[in-house]
Structures are given as C-alpha cells and as structure tokens.
Image 1 (cartoon, rainbow, N blue to C red):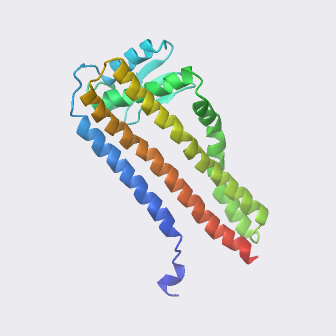
Image 2 (image 1 turned 45 degrees about the vertical axis):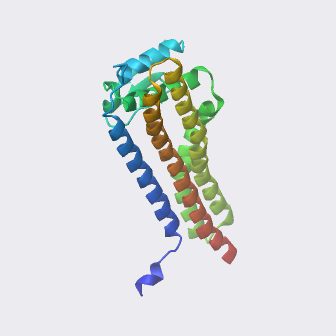
Length: 233
C-alpha cells in the first residue's frame, strides 16, 4: 500500500505539542544559563536565600536539601523538604536565588493551606492512574467493537491528566509571584536584579503552560480519533 495510506493528519496536534514543549524547555535552559552568570550583590547562595526566606515566613520545620541534577528543584509537601539542584544550591547568581525563592513560595503555600496546592496534591494519584490506564482502556474499547462506554471511560481517564496540568498553572504562577514579592520586600535583591530574576521565572512558567497546551492537544486528537469511531457505529 502507498505510504500516504498510513498518514494520520491528527499527528499534527502531537507535533505542535512537542514543538511547544521543546521550545519552552530550550528557553528556560538558555535563560537560566544566561542569568546564572549574573551574581547577586547579596552574595547569598540559593540555599542560604531559601533558609532566610523560610525563617522570615516563620517556617522552621522545612529542611533544605541538595539534590543532584540541573533544575530538578522542588518542594515536597509530604516530607516537608525543599530540594535544590546542583545549579541552585551553592550558586549565588540571581537565577539561583530566584529559583530557590520560587520553591520557598511553594513551602509558604503549604504553610498557608493554599487551596490550589492542596487540590493538586490530592489529585496526583488520580491523574497518575488516569494517564496509566487511559490508552489500554481506549484500545480495549476499539478491540471490542468501539465500545461507547469504554471509549468514554478512556477519554475521561486521559482528561484527568489534562486537568492536573491545568491545576498546576495557578500553583506555579502564584509561587513565582510570591518569590518576586518576597525578594523585593526583604531587600534581598535590587530592582535591576529582580528584573533578571523575573525573566528566569517567566521562562520556567512557560514550561508548565507548554505542558498544559500539549496535553490539551493530545486530548483533542483522541477525541477526533475515537469520537470518529463512535460516529461510524
């Protein structure tokens, strides 16, 4: 059969999502690398800045740990641990302090019972399970003769993963907003330094926007493919 017989035009949606994700990832890396060479006037490292921010927020039960990797920084609300990567923990650049402050923003969200963070944490197992079983259920629905019920269940399971990406957006944007405000109010950074830090945090935020967009596009593709199967029944 000719090659074009196998062409699936909906792959363009997956391709667009992949391009967006690659662009966002490349942007955050290049932006971070650029401002990781701009050292803060305070001389604080990422770990020292994080410790100072947590103390000023009245948080004394969150440990700060060094984790391997590049930009693998994260806050673990269950363990009450703020983990900073190789490029952040010991660096005194405006980029490193900005990332550390962002993760402190999550710790402060946790301390204040920020509702979107609580909802995201509770939704993690649902989203993980949904993304794991969505495709097997969809394929089983097709194998059994385009079962309407199974296809609907499969699409719903995949939607849980999309919803998780959307829930993540306000959590991340709020943490970045808190970081900028804290760095300004404490005088830890000058206005010039803050402008550079904002660029790093904005680039990082775009990775979450791109991930959400890619998930939505994948969901749309599944609806087109499997919705078409249902209409042909």
